[in-house]
Length: 361
Image (cartoon, rainbow, N blue to C red; front, side, top):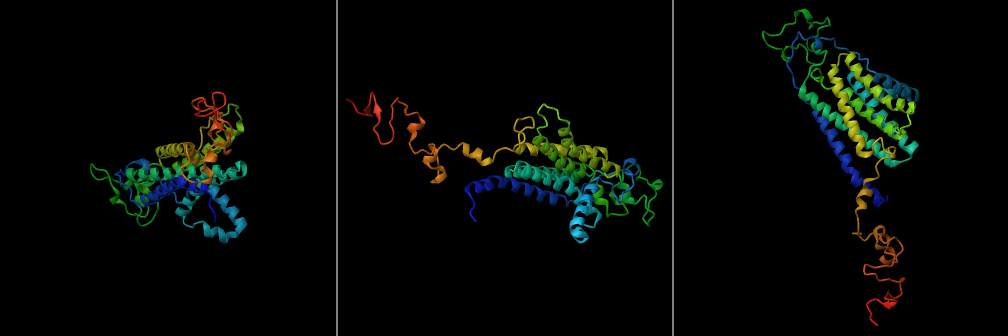
């Protein structure tokens, strides 16, 4: 299969971007396996005495169930069960990825291919989305590991406060060591302990605002939201992803998975990298061409070329001279730097009323 030189140049230019995104995602996968910092705490701290919610009421499940219903309707239950994990934790991660990553990717793909009919728009849109989420993941997880803030339900994870099991510990009996704070060594169960130290910042909040915030900017560009015409429907369409991201973040507080500071900082991280990544490949939303991505990077690189450096048909001297093959004298209006008037090809040059160039009469 023949690959054009333009395609090769595009792969060479943007391949570095994709490679760096993959490296960042690989680094995140490694960081995510590290044990977080075990911060000291007080068992009397009421902000970490909330019950552990085994079933979370995250709005992400609404999208997951909707997509699951469509899959079930088309491919039956067997296919649905094969692609959606049964484990609650894994299903939670899958739902987050579907709503904050796959859904924006599908919408961007549909707009780029059906609406704009532009492969450049598709490529830039998806590359920006991947970049935003990769940066969000590694920054959020790095902070989680370094800070080690206990979740609001930490003590229930640690001491089983609300379950009448054999390791149940009544809240009234909780006591810190004399004149000291407690640490993780007092915990009677450890299966939920590692995740219990990953409260700050909220990964759901940052990931949701990263993906859905990026989608909001993408839609704003395509609809020319800031064209000074004030169409309400444009505002509603562009705000919808942000509202959905906010609902996801709020649900994390409602389920006692995060403190309000966690989701606030997570939202800031997500929006920051959404804006940063979008502006790498798209112009300002206030610009006249905000609906179009930046031109292919190889065009900018070729713009600085003065003379062809390879014996290439597309970069021949004839193409450089305008494709006519008549020489530089036509580009210069037939006048050289000394004022000489050159005639058409094959005819003698003329100087001083028709004399040959360089001759004296």
